[in-house]
Each structure stands twice: as structure tokens, then as C-alpha cells.
Length: 324
Image 1: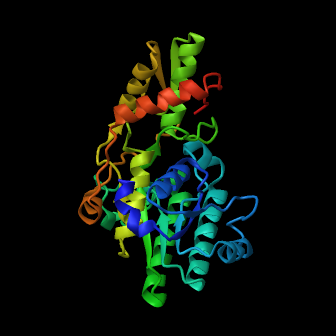
Image 2: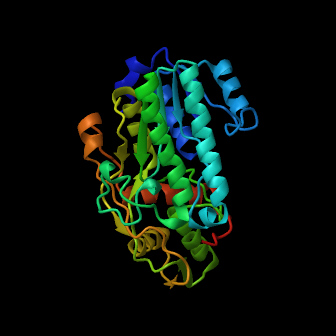
Image 3: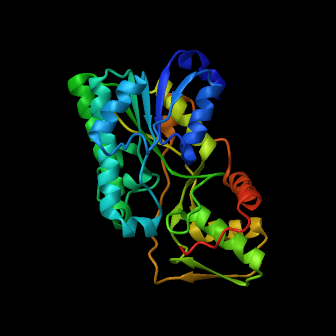
């Protein structure tokens, strides 16, 4: 899919914040494949994006034509519960400074990556973009979700007043090789992969998982997300947000069974109902992406999980088990 955008990206100077991260490294790779020869990634030790002076300096140093803002302070339920203030401030500050100085420096386009966590806790499924403001997000990740949603409002205001061409792309939960497998910060798929892989390696017969297993989630393979972001950067230029996902949900219990099977685990799965479930359901309406971008996810969950598990087994076979 990246090859289809070769002409657009040739000659562009593109700044990808978070470009060394899980999603960012794939986006940068696909930009290079698409013919972009100037992909610039601000490193945290050189540019603290929560510091306005550092952001201003970054724009002077990089002089980007287009900014893809992927950098985020993010994690699973446990991480959100431990650091709600940091998650709110860091994500809001980074986006606010980057958008403002993008305007001041005359960038051609600003691509802000949002989050499914911005949707209301009891949003009708599938989540349509028009429902974004129809309630408060699920409490454990509300600070993160609201900070991101505030940046949508900022982009819409800047489009109206200053003519800044900013778009807001909302991916569902991502997964794939090189995901964050940190026991204290990982999301559900890497956490479960660690647990079951460890159990198989250690010969354990019981694996305990958080919550009831009843909530549902939708998952998008990282390469599919990167393809969608590049297409949106090239073709989408509307103030309304655009969902990026598969449009298919799976219960956490069913997900655990899938991962157990793929890792070769045959023991018992026990659910710790004293721990929080998080959002009851997550499933996106992806019609806007199909209509506006001609995009649909290509990697199904079974195939994506298999690729991710094989990567983990190959490169992290001795890593300790996750706690969450």
C-alpha cells in the first residue's frame, strides 16, 4: 500500500514524533518505502516535547513540511491508574506545543494520532465518530483519552481561525511485533502473550488474568495502522476525526483462549474478578476510512497474534512474566 503514495511523499520533509516507538518505527519504514527521503525523528534526550522551548527548537532544526504526531505517554489499565496526572499533562502538553508551533512555522499538514480511549464509556457499538462527545470516557483511562480529545478541538479551532490543515486519526488498540512488553505498562495482548509464554516455558498449569474476561476489544495490527496513517496524511483533509480499525470485536476471555492455544498452553485460566475490566466494549465503525481512504485492515487477528507470538518467542524467550 505504501508504494501507491510514492509521488506524494517524494521531496517531503516529514517529522514523525515517537518515530522510534512501536507504531512509529513501522510508519517511518513505510514512509521510506513510499519514497520519502527526509524522515526526521526527534529523540527525547534532544527534544523534550512537553517543553515548548524544545518544540520550537525542533521546528527550526527540522523545518518539516508535514508532522505526524505519534509520541504519547500511554499504557494499560495499571499504568493509567498509577499515573493519571502524568498521562494527562504529558499528552496534552506535547500536542498543544506541536500544533501551535506547527502553525507558527507554516507546516503543510499536521497529523494527530488520537485514541479509542476518548470515546464514552457506554458508547453505542460500533463507535461512530459522531458519538465522541456523547459521554465521559471509562474512568481508568479518562485523563489520557480527554487529553487526546482536547487536541482534536484545538486542531478544529486552528483550522477555522488559521487555516491549519490538521487531521485527527483514531486507531483502535494496536498490537504486533516490537509492542511494549513491559510488565507494568503493557496492554492486554502483550501482557497475555508474556503470561502464557512464561507458563509454557516454566511448566505452569494455572495462569491468572485480570478482570472477568467479559469485556470486548477490537485490535488492529500495527502494519495496517501505519498504512492507514500514511493514506490519511495524503488523502484526508477534514475537521472530523476518522476511525482506524477492523470493525470486529472479541471478548477478552476469547482472546486469552486464542493466545493460550497459539503459545501451546493447555492449563487452566483463572480470572481475578477483583481487578478492573476497563471499558465494557470497544468496536469501531470504520466506514469513514473505507469511504474516504479506500482502506480496510488486511491482517486478521489470528495471523497477527501468530506473528507477534513468534517474534516474542524468538527475541524475548527468557523475559519475566507480566503482572497484569
